[in-house]
Length: 130
Picture 1 (cartoon, rainbow, N blue to C red):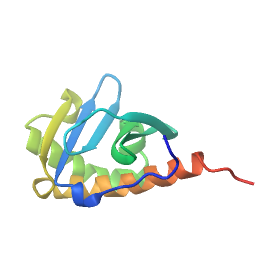
Picture 2 (cartoon, rainbow, N blue to C red):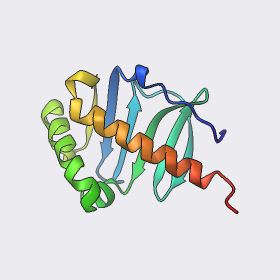
Picture 3 (spheres, one colour):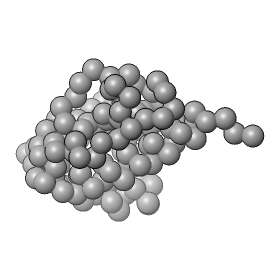
């Protein structure tokens, strides 16, 4: 994987969110999941890259990081409510949903936020520091 990844937010037409309760891993994709290289961005954050562009994220320890840490919890609570309503099931039951970004506005905004944070983490982890 290169250290210079692109991100096409114009491609954010559909959002796919999957959560595995047993592993406490959330996966979020621009559109449908597709073959990708997965590279750690640091501390349980993984970027999925397809053809030099970010195509998704895997967030390990999702509940601990995004529902317990004050910064993330306030934003993520609205996302979880939106996803549970759209999927017709609770996060704890596992969720797998693909929907147009406009049907999941809180989730789409949250995804852009965490994409930015993941990209910054990735750059930091893959750039030489004096």
